Length: 269
Image (cartoon, rainbow, N blue to C red; front, side, top):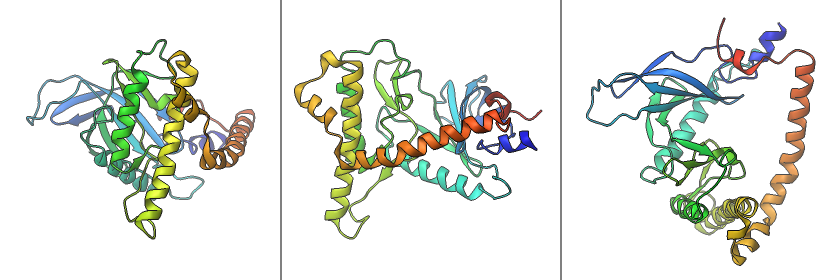
């Protein structure tokens, strides 16, 4: 019973990712789990076949993201997984054609989708960044903003990649937000909210630059890196206590033996 509860904290519980998948007629085999948390399981697959059933090029590596399927203490959560998957797929479709964002390949099952793997390392892992990295990153973000999108999760360095092409890339658009012209009561309110949230994206870019490449930071960028704004302060006021509560709860569950090791949560014995 104790171990069973631990599996409920993962999106797919004990369920094992498929050993093999087919994308565009090309076969891919399981390689490794990249991330598994309450909301999603993200898995890397490598190609082991050159046979293709379509003329579309197939990448050497693909990522399968499966949103929540596991129930939680008897409460069904498949509906949440479907909603999260549909939401992120719509976000990726909105960004199609923008280099530096994941290339969506196809849907997978009820709660999953596939996208092309981006070779490189995260901003948290990068030992040295190109001098123009943040200039290029700003251009990428501006393209995203032109689609009326807000990334919203820019504070996480694991979501920002330095690709093997020495260019910036963004992954994980699960909580990103698209605010059209008429989302709220009027265009004016919609535009005002969108611009405020997009400024928060910019704040985080220059905050990362201030920490990682302070010698390259321009005076106007330094000002933006220090301008938190009311929305960011409100987010911190809410998110910080919740983060501490979550960490405390996970620590308590680990002490009580109610957590399972991550690698065990991926596979059914």
